[in-house]
Image (cartoon, rainbow, N blue to C red):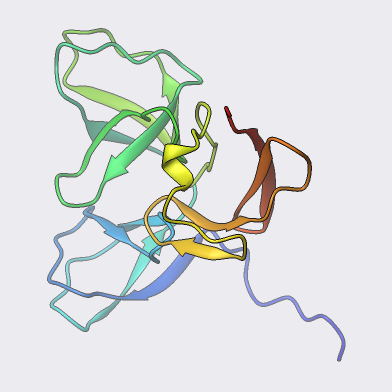
Length: 163
């Protein structure tokens, strides 16, 4: 079968799992991909969502986020925060936000592993592929001694595992 162009992919139709307002952040999948609604909709409605671009999100005051810092967008609150070590972000800070700022500009759906995954983080994983729906798509058996490979949206990254 020949490859056929479908669309640019910046906007995706999404079936809402709950009612959403205009410009709400919604989960596209269980792996952290988010969309920004282009219209309000009720549960089970299909609405167009932006899946690329830079958007302003609320953030908690008291924490500065510098441009280029991986961030995680909380779908339940619509806020963005610097990504904790050991997790995969779903955005990147586009313009620095000072500690007192209540908003931050984020380029959405940029997935970056953050920090080192420890042996304790892997305690629930077997040596075969194991899904962790919120942070990574798969953790695979180590490709080298003391390392694991994490695959997120078909992008593989190796992490060192402390022993």
